[in-house]
Amino acid sequence: MNQDAKIRSQRAVRQLLESWQRSGVTHLRQMEPVPQMSADATSSVEAPQEIPMQTVAPTVPLPPQPIVPSPQTSKTPEEPTVESDQTRKEMSVPRTTKSKLNKGDRQAELDILATKVSKCTRCPELAETRTQTVFGVGNPRAKIMFIGEAPGADEDKQGEPFVGRAGKLLDKIIEACQLKRSDIYIANILRCRPPGNRNPSDLEASNCRGFLDAQIEIVDPDYIVCWGSVAAKNLLHSDLPIGKMRGDFYEYGRAKVVCTYHPSYLLRNPSAKKNVWEDMIYLFADMGIDLKTQD
Image (cartoon, rainbow, N blue to C red; front, side):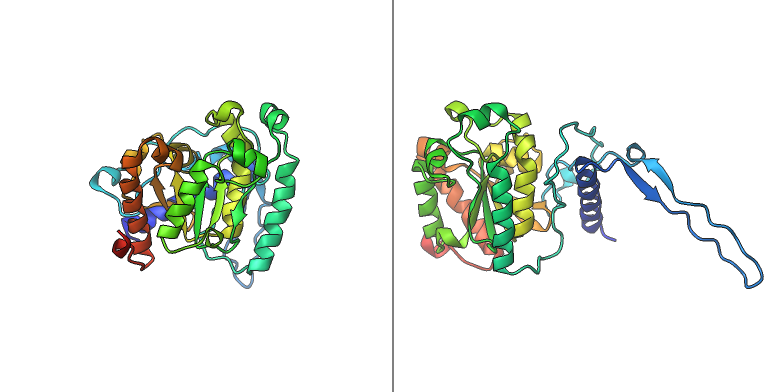
């Protein structure tokens, strides 16, 4: 097994074990191998015994690594400590094989999940101040999934992500990529608006993470775009600034992840639009689509 395949295999195993832990699994059953028995001999097999989950290696997601490791990322990283947060019942294992669900089935599952989200009160402050939850919108079989940070005032009012000034700019970016908004699936790290449009807290993002993972699992995109540092930090568990994460593909399940500046940042810093367009060219080139003629 080459080094790249080994890294992917380790990441998949750790994501699976993390999912079990956060879904309330505390023990694994260990089966002893059955001894070889001759025709005239018998041997008793020990009953399965439960072992504590803690005997398994710590299972937090690895820090984000580019798909093609650089010399700096070829070293074996130190094992981080298992994070402690609430059990996330909706947590799903990031998919490593393509989903076979049809579009209608995926939409039905998303509708069920959206109903759960609408009743969520895990974050008391957000539940008390929101107008409504903002679940997600778009093609349930989209090849590309956009992830932002949290709803703003316009999103809270309309119940749809990216509909304010930043959303209008995002629509222009989508059109420049020769797509329509309905071709993409759009979601956020949070499904409730933080008061004053502040950034999500770590606890709020953790409380909402199971819903995000379930959306990714159902839509099963080939590509994910993290718009802004909040999305990148929470999806990929990275503290790197967006400027240093641009220009590489990262992995989440079977999806390739690109990180770029949030549209609201572009409203304040128009010169960064060029950087975002370069990131879109990079993404679509991997899909076999040349956007350079649109420069």
